[in-house]
Amino acid sequence: MRSTPSLSLRASTVDDTLAVAAALAGLARAGDVVLLAGEMGTGKTTFAQGFGRAMGVDEPITSPTFTLVHSYPTAGPTLHHADLYRLEHMSEVADLALGELAEFHGIVLVEWGDVAAGAFGDHVVVRLGHVDGDDAARTVVLTAVGGAWARRWGALVEATAEWCDQ
Image 1 (tube, rainbow, N blue to C red):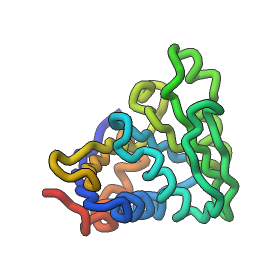
Image 2: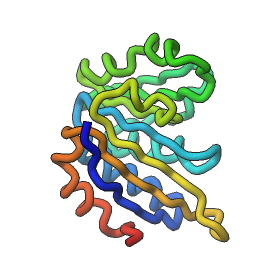
Image 3: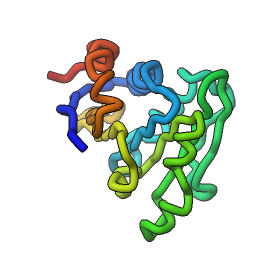
Image 4: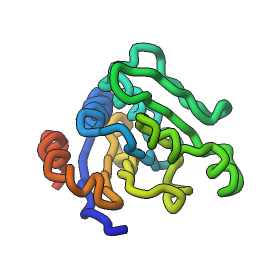
């Protein structure tokens, strides 16, 4: 799979993180996989909350660390929110059948998804990081893998221009 150049953003506040997530959600389609990466406490679940709100999820979105997958029906595709933090083997990732959830009119967000990136076809990686000296700010690096997101890259650049860190 080919990789699209990364897009570096800066979310100065939690509201910015939620807004970046909403911008990505606005371009997401049924069948998409979004892998959330970053150290503990960088905002992966916060990003998932902003993404879900933008899709119309009005119930609380929490990290599915122990249940592994939460599903949220929306007026459009179902949002499936997974967390791979507690999984120890790649076979456990395969058992979750996350790719199939996306294929059947869903969008899949996967916290700690970078550890299993090879198990997914086309996807976008959202890597969140801390900003030294600013507890509220986050770096957000978006990278598309495969053609599905590459075709929407220009629209994603436009939708996130406000947070561009370049």
